[in-house]
Structure formats: C-alpha cells, structure tokens
Amino acid sequence: MSSSLSTVPSTLISLATHPSSLRHNRWAQVAVLIAIWFASEMVRVRWHLPLPGSVIGFFLVWLLLETRALPAAWIERGADSLLNHLVLFFVPAMLALVGHPELLSFTGVKLLAAILVGTVIVMSGTALVVELGFLWSARRASR
Amino acid sequence: MNAVVTAVFWGAITLGVYAGARALHARRPRWWTSPMLATWTLCGGLIVALHTTYQDYLSGTQWLIFLLGPATVAFAIPIHRHRTLIRRHRVMLGVGVVTGCLLAIGSSWLLAGLFHLSPELRASLLPRSITTPFAMSTSSVLGGLPELTASFTAITGLFGAAIGELLLTYLPVRSAFARGALFGMGAHGAGVAKAREIGGEEGAVAGLIMVLAGLFTVIGVAVFSAWL
Image 1 (cartoon, rainbow over the protein chains, first blue to last red):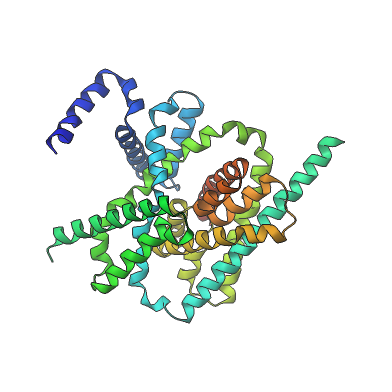
Image 2 (spheres, rainbow over the protein chains, first blue to last red):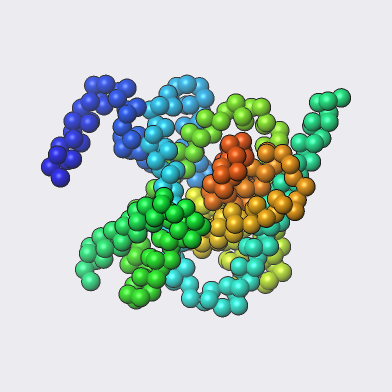
C-alpha cells in the first residue's frame, strides 16, 4: 500500500518535469480525460450550452487531435482503458430496473416487443439503404 | 447498515463481479458470459435478495456512472484513428447515420404509440439504438428516465448482436460497409464486438457508425429542443 501511495507524488514530479512521460501513464491519461470532461461541464453551465458537457469535451479533444495541438499518444492509453470498461460504467444505471417493479407486467412485455421489432427495423433498413447507396455509387464510378 | 459500509460494500461487489465475469468471458467467450449480462443479473439478484433499495446501491456505484462523461470524451480517439476511413467514405457514413437515426427514433416513437406506452416510457425508449452514454444524456433532454434508457439500450444491444447474422442471411446485403453499418447502428457496443468477429472493415465501420450516430442524435435533439 505504502509503495503504491508513494508512487503518486513521484509520478506527479516526473509528469511535471517531463511532460512526455504522460505517454506511458494510463492513470494520468484517465485523469486528464476526467479533467477535460469536468472543464467542459463547467463551460456548459457557464454559457448555458444545450449540448452535454461530455459531448463538448469530445469535440474539443477531436479538434485538438486533428490540428495536432494534442498528440494522440498523450491520451490514447487512457481513452482505450475507459472505452474498454464502458460496460462497468453503465451497469449501475441499468440496475435502476430493480426500483421499477411495475415494469414486470404487460407494460414490460410491450416495451420488450417495441425494442425487438424496432431493432429489426433499424438494422434491416440501415443495411439496405447503405447497400443501395453503395451499388449506386459503384455504378456511377464505373460509367 | 452504516452508510459508508453500505457504499463500500456495493462498490466492491460490483467491481468484484465485473472482474470475475471478465475473467470468465476471456476463458469462455459466450453471450451468456458477457460481463454486462453477468454483472447486471448477479448484482440485480443480490440487491433483490438483500432487500436493498436502489438508492443504497447507487451510493457505492454512482462514481462509476460519472465515468461515462470522460468515456464519451475518450471516443475522440477511435474517431481520430479512423480519420482516413471517414474522409474516404464520408457520404456513405452520412447516409447510414442519418437513415439509421431517423429509423431508430421513428420506429421507437411509432411502436410506443401503437402500444399506448406512457410519454415518459416513450421518451426513455427513443434513444435506445445509440451507445449508452449518448443515449442516457439524450433521454434526460427528451423527458425520459436515463436509468431506464440504460436498460432499454442494453437489451437493444444484446438482441441486435444476437440476430444480426441471421438478418444478414436473409437480406441482400453484400458489402462489408453495409454489414458493418447494420451492427453499429442497430446494436451499438455489442454489435461492434460482433462486427469485429466478422471482419476488420465491418468492425471499423460499425465502430464509426456507432459514435457518429450518438453524436448526430445528441446534436439533433439539442437543436430540436432549443428550436421548440
């Protein structure tokens, strides 16, 4: 325990003196992403923006990456870790279902039916339209 | 039970069950060992068995839900990684995302009306086809319950990933691009994992469509609600 705690200040010192060491530290990168998200939430509140802070943060980071102002190596390990464990972050929200016993009824059956039928519609419709578009653009290219 | 003990207990249980399910899934990759399904059912079963309220459970796990925010920011990395694919296929990606999002929201709206679901349930159902962090923030803007949307979205992903290949045997869809779009649009995270098993291009397209559909829906709903 003491050894893992003592690495925190030494990590901070090495990050402060050698910013490029950020590219090796997954946890520091996660902290950077949390800080960007937090700052974006404050921006949203301050200027009453209609988008969620997380989406504002997404566009900010995307812009910084495309303009090469932010090297991808400085956050990509942390980003991959967060996305790898995305399930862990939304399962606690899914468990809210235990507080809705009223859904264990005909309403629940109707909800399930709406989800299943809707999903078949979305998948088939999207695939067919994209396939048609693909055939159309291939035919136009060959002419 | 003491409030702090309760919080630590449920936080540790959730992390432990998740870690165990991941280890099991790495050894036996089946749909029923998926960490999402295992963590959901085991923690849910335990909550019911111990007569815990959702509020008590949340006291130890709320911080995990907060991490959906930074995770949404993190989606900038895969989008940046596939920038050449986006540039080359921007028109078809746009067609797929716009069609898919309109079909997703439209079909949910109509089916909820057909089944006479309450306005709250209907709003919770609308964003269910996009990836969970985007779906939950869209749900609250629309007047739905984000926690219910999380479950509807998960069921969508599980079901979509399970029937995707069956649909592909019936549909006249040959291009890897359209096959990837089917999974990314219809079954978000679970669909992307399935599409990766089918092929590299299918997986990349599914991942892109998933993130772009989330962005398109969030922005579309924000513009729409500001305009109303």
